[in-house]
Image (cartoon, rainbow over all chains, first blue to last red):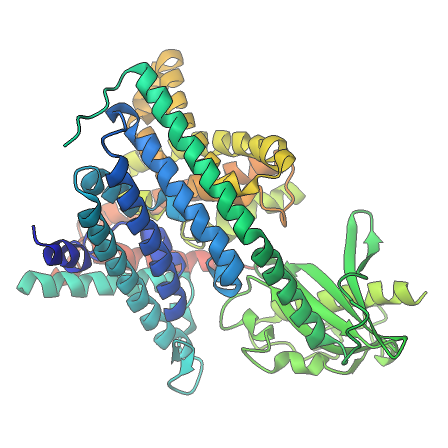
Length: 194
Length: 203
Length: 192
């Protein structure tokens, strides 16, 4: 498989959110605005790339029977690194994302890629795979966040685009489910035609 | 390709142990490196909030280092950050919480001048509904401006319940946020708690 | 009274799935039938309560004592993962009947972020929960998860018979339904 194909596969064809329906908790929970969605997406991308590389480097040293706990330790380490760094250098974003940062650990996308891709491929391919998957995830979150912010607060990336408050429900919990539902329907329709 | 490590008991234990040890070391290292910046970031937020709610003060007298706690009840105390200007106390920033919010507890910083007027307020941390309750934040609406220069000691307690800072629905003086009476009430409650604490300093 | 408020708040007002977005994967994954939803609910109540008690003790008597709170994420997830395994083994020996009912759901719980989420929430310094409060909090949260899951499964069973537009079939309509359910649960907010 060419490098480009590894990358685009994660970004489009096997998009974690729209196609595989993985990592839904942060997808719904952190996308009250475009910026929050982007922040969460990039934090996840970082963990995904790092853990993919780490797993692919040590894959031959880990006995099969304990590979899952070993992967979890590796992932949890990178998650904590992200958590501490974000607390130190981006305290505002950390305050908004809060609980969802430590919960990156149980994001099925990351363990899933470690198991399905990184444990069978070399470090470079694993990094590209992680990057593709991660950016695809970040793109989905930013998209959802933008739509919710436009409809709910009348702005995008904190820039006001129309007067008034917007339909509040889209910023609240129900709006998250409804917008994602329509987005998935749209993506399914578009990909089926192609 | 190197051959795969076999799943013997010794191998499994050794590998898991080594990985855990490496992970702990890496984390301890990152923790040490980020400890300072995290403390600094937290301090910065506090400093900013204090500066927002009290009149300009002399930086030679550090309000954070001179913080003291005021007990309101058993196990319930608020932090007070005093500021000085020209040798005299010029303001008191009180960090007050309320558990009456729409989504539970939230924290605000309330600044008083020595005569008991509220100088200004700032929201520190909250989980109120976006678009409704969160209008108490300065960045979302100008609702909280009615607390600026609020002359608390001279508010008339119409219903005589001893609470001065109340929304109009409760016979008070504060206009509630439209459709967010509970959040507005809670905000008043936090201010009232801060004022109760303030009265104790003055005693 | 305080405990009743805690329970109502955890089950209805701050429903873990519909208001806090935790445990979404199993919420969509095992909600096709009421029966499986009930099985999952049982397993989650069981594991979430035990996990919260164990992680609470770990936090108070190990992490806090040694000042290594930064190890929280890594230790909690390992505890939960091994706890699930342990529960599985013990259940198999002690109560084969219960194992039959819950067995297939147990492995799925490790990656249920609600379990880790609640364990972390229960030890948050600003809540300052006692062990009893944490236990009640965890159990009520799990019941709230179960309530949402079973209600949703009931709705989806009925939806099988409904005439849904082609493009919306399957996952999209499930999301919209969940959105409406969340809207209904918003009616509870403010009561506690």
